[in-house]
Structures are given as structure tokens and as C-alpha cells.
Amino acid sequence: MTVNILAIESSCDETSASVISDGKVLNNIIATQSVHEKYGGVVPELASRAHQQHLIPTIHEALSQSGISKAELSAVAFTRGPGLLGSLLVGGSFAKAFAFGLGLPLIEVNHMEAHILAHFIEDPKPSFPFICLTVSGGHTQLVLVRDYLDMEVVGETLDDAVGEAFDKTAKLLGLPYPGGPHLDKLAAAGDPHAFSFPVTSMKGLDFSFSGIKTAVLYFLRDRLKEDPDFIKTRMADICASVQFSLISMLMLKVKKAAATYGVSQIAIAGGVSANRGLRQTLTDLAEEMGWQVFVPRLEYCTDNAAMIAMAGYFKYQRGIFCDLEVSPSAKMKIGNND
Ligand code: KG4
Ligand code: ZN
Image 1: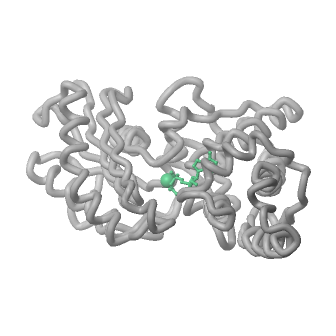
Image 2: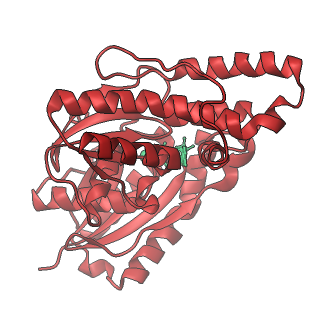
């Protein structure tokens, strides 16, 4: 019998629904919340309210586009965490009610595991074991992936996520939120060696990105004193130099992780993997190191329900379901689903 799963993602500021049939993603409907732009960051209260408005139309579109009726569904998968509690509650409550109403099994999905499992939506797919660098607005992790549902965090940021470092730097430069993609675009025309920003290296495979914001803050303060038009005239060079330093910090640990675990397949996941500088640097490094690199299509890099559907499918195959009592978990960790 065909396995059809409806998946729901609502961990942050994207409301998304997807239908997967026998492991093949049929669609990936995403409603982006523009309400946060004017605040320069995601406002949790507004995010949960926007999820309430977007959720039913998004699910309706995913189901009708797929041509699969509610009666043909085999299960409902949803993001349990990590993420914003209020946002998770909206998607989670809907998923529970929907599954209960239709008498369907319910599958809870860890958002960070799903980012990694997005690599199995389309070819080429990595084989086990591989290292995944998960880089988003909330996380920076190096994960050793032994199997679809056997993952271990081997390194992570001790403070800010790298996406946060991109966004905070962009904010200092007066760029709109989220600043990561803007900084990326401007960096393409700049010289990455024009200015030098710190490359911090923590012990083992851990990261630290909080220093860069302060470094950029003081750097701009000093330069603007000399030349009030400094940002305007050197924007591309500043962006390229900050980006270079952030990517260097990431690459340093990817190299170390690959050597430590004897792995030559490297994957990247999460919103920051859309960064062109990061993709290029990783591709160049792979050639030098003899690695095989895997980068999902952009649509599957940022928050989306297709990755939740993929993760849900793997759990369905193994008969891993949850009950209606399960509550959202803002700080849910890979390999420790409490
Ligand atoms: O995974 P994601 O969509 O959401 C979560 O945080 O879970 O990641 C969003 C982050 C934001 O910090 C955004 O600025 C960053 O990914 N981002 C980028 C690029 N595209 C998105 N950062 C740098 N360069 C990009 N092209
Ligand atoms: Zn995410």
C-alpha cells in the first residue's frame, strides 16, 4: 500500500506543508511571514499569530496540489522542536487534532534532524557515515550522521549561531532583515582580504561567533570617525571580509571533523548553506581534500516542510510514532528527543 504523509513545519517564521508519497516529495508549500521585516528580527508573538492565519490555507494547498485526499493519508508528521514555543504549538496542535480526527498515526520530527535529512529528498544523496554542517539562524552544529535516525552532535557553537552573526553584522551595516542573503550578495563584488576580522577557534569541534559582532562594531565606529561615508563606499569589501572570516571559522572545524572521524562525505544544511561564498569555499576545499560535498537545493536549505516529510517517512518505515500527549520542545536536541 502507498504510504502518504502530510508534514507540517512551524518552528520559526515559515509556515509550510508538504505531502510525501512512498518517499517521493510531491510538493513543498511555504508561506513566508513578512510581518517581521520592520522589526529587524522574528517577533515570537507575531510569528505564532501568522502561523494561525497561514496554516490551514498552506495545508489545503499542499493536499489539493498533491491530488491525495485526506482519506488516502497514512500519517501526519510535524515539527516538535527546536524552535519558538508559540510557533511550534500552532503547528503541533493542528497536527494532533488533524491526526486524531482522521484516526491517523502521528510522527514528531526534530527540526535539526530534518535539515540533515533534506539531503535525501533528491539525488545526489550522501552515504553513511557523513558529516553535516548545519548552519542556520538559530544553530551551528557539526553532526556525525551514521544512519537516517542515528546522529550525533560532535561540535556546536557556544554562543551565537553563524546565521545570527551574518544578520547582526548586516544590521550594523544598515541592511534589511534577515541580512544574511543581502550580505552574501554584496560580498560577491568585494575583496575578502580588504579588511581583517578575527577568526576565533574554540576547543575541539566547537565554534564561537559572538566576537565578530563586537569586532565589526568597533571597526565601523573607528572608520566612520575618519570617513562618514566609509560604509557606503566600502560596503562590498566589508561584507566580503566579514563573510571570509565567518566561512574560515566554519571550514577550520569541518576539516578537523573530517580528519577526526575519517569521513570524506561532507554535507551542509540550514539557511546559511544558501551562502554562495560558503558553497564555493567548500567546493574548492573538497577538491583539495578529496571530499564529496552535498548541498541541497535552496528550497530545501531554508525552513520547509519537505524535510519534515522526509524525516517523517523514515520514522514511518521504522514504526516510530508518538502519542497525542507529546508537547512542543523549544530546545529539543539531536539524539536526545526530550
Ligand atoms: O534555516 P533557516 O531558514 O532558519 C532557521 O534559523 O532555522 O536559516 C535562516 C538564517 C538567517 O540567519 C539568514 O540570514 C541566513 O539563514 N541566510 C543566509 C543566506 N540565506 C539565508 N546567510 C548567509 N548567506 C545567505 N545567502
Ligand atoms: Zn531551520
